[in-house]
Amino acid sequence: MSLSNKQTQFLKAKAHDLKPVILLGNNGLTEGVLAEIETALNFHELIKIKVPTADREQKVLIMDAIVRETKAEQVQAIGKIQVIFRPSKDKKIQLPRG
Image (cartoon, rainbow, N blue to C red):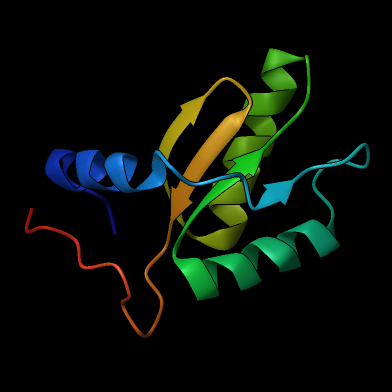
């Protein structure tokens, strides 16, 4: 699934007021963190993740790994905050048509 420009803008607007649900710690991206991200995606569909690392390349690698492992779509990445979306079975968020 890939998001259209209109859908991405819609999700960015919805994510604006959200607080980060997942905060990566010193251990980085662990199995436990991935499990928490999965749970949050299943419940909320649209979540913010804070990746607090000073190394830009490492941050990009972690964000790419999160998207790859969760099979979610990255909506936005600004600084240390990543916004990802994955529809659940309930389809709580109704995306506008393409």
